[in-house]
Each structure stands twice: as structure tokens, then as C-alpha cells.
Length: 265
Image (tube, rainbow, N blue to C red; front, side, top):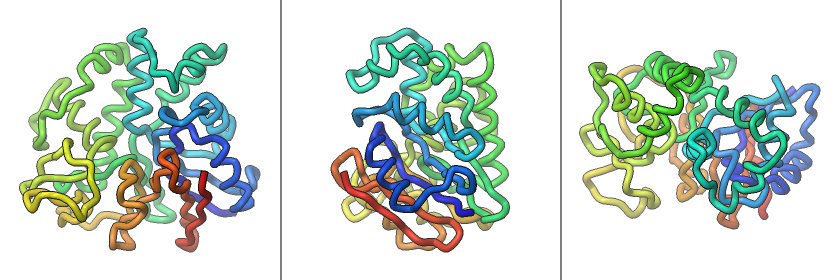
């Protein structure tokens, strides 16, 4: 039995199947963790959703920004981008969307002492804070307020976390932190405009994983930041989005022994 964390699929179904062949995935024994962004950009978002859903308890996935954007368009009846049209027209689209909406924003495994999120953890958050905020957002997605949330989801503010944040401003910060964050300003605020590699950025910002957190965090597995190409300079922070949809690699990280596996498009 082995557990693998797999980077952003973004509709790259064929590459996923080749990666699973490479790791000799056994659905009766192995567990797959997906760091979010199952859909969009790539050609087979529908197939990716159907496959991950079919794994049942054999898969764990957290929501990414592209997943939330897909859900927002579906719930608000907005036209999907070309890459999602096939998904929106599928006979099982409603079932798939309901399943996707029930997925968490963060997953912690005590056995591996490892946290999985799509983008990262803000400098001021502890593990407990992260899980509480992720649950808060998940409960909103399961409530009658979900459509109002989707209407207020987009935007880059507030930039600074405060326990006093309320309403949609609070939910928007949680969303941005867990699914969009890459860099933070030196005072811990979110910088959501910069998307480059850490080698090319202002001295006024730095990657979220280079900050000292208030309490020791567990190992963190995340995706979202393809420009990192899997390199964080730390064994604690494991980046598994290696830009498959951009022509690079789809990566699996085996939690049991820290070994990496990759396939190219």
C-alpha cells in the first residue's frame, strides 16, 4: 500500500493514466491525493472528474482556484470557457459538480503529519487555523448561501488576515489564501498579482513558504505554482505542480518514502 500526491491535472487525463501505469497504481491498495485544479485548460476535464470520483475512498482531493471557478460558472449559469463546454453538457454534469463541491479545501493526515492544500498557508496561520478556515469555506459551499458566495468570490482584497474579518470579505481571504496565493508582502499580506518564479520578483515580497510561521507546521504538499517546477529549497514544502498542461511534466510524490515520479505530455 502506498500514498501518492499528484500535481494539478487541469484536464490532462491521458498523462494521468500514463503516470498511474508508471507507479503501478493498485486501486485496491493505493491512495491518491490530488492537490486541486482537476479541471480547465487541458482537453479532458470531464474524464478527469469522472475518474477521480470513481476512485471513491481511494482518492483525496482539495479544491483549487480553477475548480472553484468552474463551480461558480455552473451554479451561476454562466457560459463556460471552451475547455469546459464538454463537461457542462455531459449527462452526469450535475452529479459531478455536486461531488466536486463537496471536496475539502485542506486535508491533514496524522500518519504522515502532512497537510495538503492547493496554493499554500498564510504566514500567520497555524495548522489548526488552516483546518478551521478550510472547513468554514467548505460549509459555505454546502449551504444555501453558495450562490451568493460565488458572486462575491472574486477579488484581491482583503490582503491581510484578521480574526475580525466577517462575511464575504472573510471567505474571500480564505479562498485566496488556500487556492490563489504564491507571494506575500513582508508584513504577511497576500500579493496576488505576481505569478513569476521566485528568482524574478520584487524585494518587497517573497514566497509564502519562506516565512516563519507562529507554530511549527507539518510537511505541506501543494500545487498551483507551476513556475516553481517542483523546487522550494525545503524538504518540508513539497510542490507537485510541474506544469503538465504547459507541456512540462505531471508529477506524483510518494509520501511513504519521498520518491518522485514524472511523465511528460
